Length: 511
Image 1 (cartoon, rainbow, N blue to C red):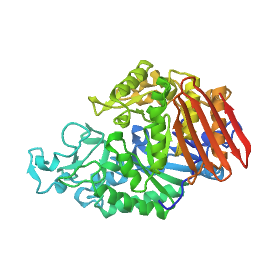
Image 2: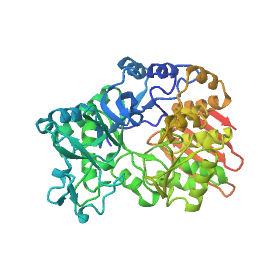
Image 3: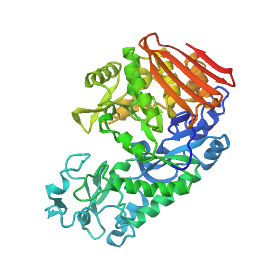
């Protein structure tokens, strides 16, 4: 990656998470109680025109004006806040202009091959079934991973009445209304189409104009598809696509952050990093809870040393819009400890998310990070201190700042599949004002300002990590005459964080 991404803290929220609109969040970032804490902001994709999955089914990448405007983004840029935004590489909404054009014009649509015509893709690889789609021979699909039962097909009705099968990896809903077929869903894009690459380029240019420095690639691992190969992390096709996207992004001064979950044992994180990309540190959230619950940071220290020794550049987090990862820990933490973590978080009101309904393949647990820690303020503050000293760029879920608790009412209101709403509570300005007066909030902000201000936290710093036999965990950063050190006792939950410049102490927190 040619451009440097600074390591100052990054806020993470929906545009309506803190006060109701992006304008409200921009104002909050200037509030004296929060100012100078964040230099980056990951705004989740309900920022765009979208229709499902709270933003991750994108209609187009124009701003959802009810939540965010160009003026709001300009205010963030003026405040020195750069953005991390999502680009959903694999699919687009059925409400997208491209798919709507296909529905309207069928065979004559300029977007006829913008999406993946199933029968064209599998031509010569199987037999045509009575339902009108090719059933590929087993030899071609035995290594493929489908996200739902059956083949990933959406039958699309063309204007002439023909039913044409298109590739549909994720959600779909089809119904008849007043004699017309209606659709909801996420249609896979055809990366072999020049039109798709024109769309990719136009989208990245748009994101750059918003002030984006880091682009999170959602569902990138499903984009490369070839008969007879895997349709998830297809190699080398996946890397070829990423390199081409990276070339486009770098032309607009942006870096890529491919998002993927896989077990530690598979070493996918290491493979992605070896290709020169930043990774998500999906290991840290579970490792911290494990260390805090057992009073033992040995495994956590080992992970920190691996990041340092292998020069793995990461974005790390505690909570996020999704669940607390568990699949990722497999191979790093014994299975019994992972199950104990799951049991603990569920006993504290969390929800289990298994991998595509398979009960023997745990994926994540949905809970706020504060509730996952038993709503223990000392644990949350220690977790934040450790996160801010870990190698990488720290990303902070807005709800964790305010010690958000599991929102079971929101889950109930969301209905089936609404388990993620447990950790997505929209906060009113009144509630924010009240929470900003708490010692826990003030301490977190003090640590965030420390991380932002100290020049030791740099991409060219020397970092060390360790854990002594008494359970004291140490992380230290040095760059020239600037130094930062954290000593944390996972048995007592006490810690000391200190920074110095030119031999003079610039920050100290002892808790």
